[in-house]
Image (cartoon, rainbow, N blue to C red; front, side):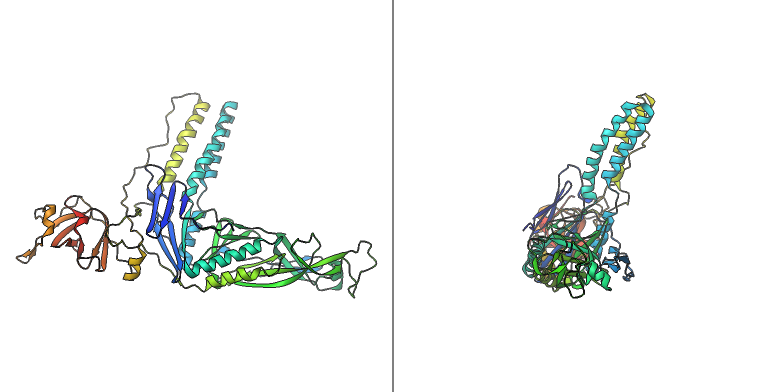
Length: 548
């Protein structure tokens, strides 16, 4: 089967690497910072249930927007051959929300709503070329050739600026349940024919009954597609089953069902997804699928007793096939009906969905605590300083310089025109830092310690006492005259501040790199320090130095 789990996920120049020890990210372009890339989300699913964790990237602060309760819209009906047809269609996907997936869903829709740089750069280049061609003649149209590289550059930019990264760590019951769902989906996909039922209606008079080969119901159906794919704005190590239902697509992820309608995405919890299936006798007027079971025959124009109506010369026999229909519904608006040419294939898929629905769920957005050696080795999280999108500004500046200047040269005929694009925006230095994933430490402590902000390394030290050399840290400092003698030190990396001298003590806080600390006491290989005049604790001597 085409389903498989990868150990890494690529989004443009960014590559997310996942392992039991944590999450890392590498950048394929020198000088490109982690904060400009997509956000990574780690979802662990095992015996303990489903756990969400936001790990990497410059996602800012997501805003959870309140969604009004879904109100079913009136059924859409229309007449077709004396039969009133009712449309079978899901509601607005924006009403499909799940509390445990709300932040991720908001981010996905935010990414999907961003301007496609591929289309913007392509049409900008084509427009400049057309304008130059009208102004200067045929040679100016050559600028239209820049539309292709503009599209390629925009496609590359979209590959990470319009992308949300999801990494699934499946084990135990969750892995077994999802494999069960995938196997059931493969069974559905193996059917010779698959249809999406768009509308249906009951035959209510004898004339319509005779005209439609004695069928009791009429349906509008179209062939549908079952595949393994992801929404365009999501990169993941899991490629989920995708069921196309008309203009919408249902993606069966390990933790949630995503419903995509154009550029918008909704989410339905497996607990709230109702699946009903039953055998259906279908008068097949088209080609009979190779795996279909023919259970009866009828006439194209039957009489009241079910025999052939002799008034029609082309009155031929039509096979009645036994198909299997699956109906998906939810309180948030899902309403889709699909039909398959082989019976007995829906049970395995529905059982997989049911097993995923029974997994316990816990919503956590946590930054994992540091490992036991007190040295944090992880990719940094950038703290956004300003809201301006510098990447977009740089892209449009480059576009203006590369396309605008040649166009003006062709129109005016002078190479002495100066660019009026203005000064490039000032760059603002942003401090960054993250914590690495250590689920063992997190489970033992029950909660993550607060993250303290890094103190400016150029600030005036708290104490004016002389700075001791590194070997002075091996002996204990004393308190003289009721006033603490403090030795100023700097953290060499991100480090855990603990309640006592040793890794067995609980973590009080995580201190950023180059933070000024005051050493109050030294005990063996550990020092009791004060941070920012507010917190006291112990940290390893190997993690502090006498200079930043």
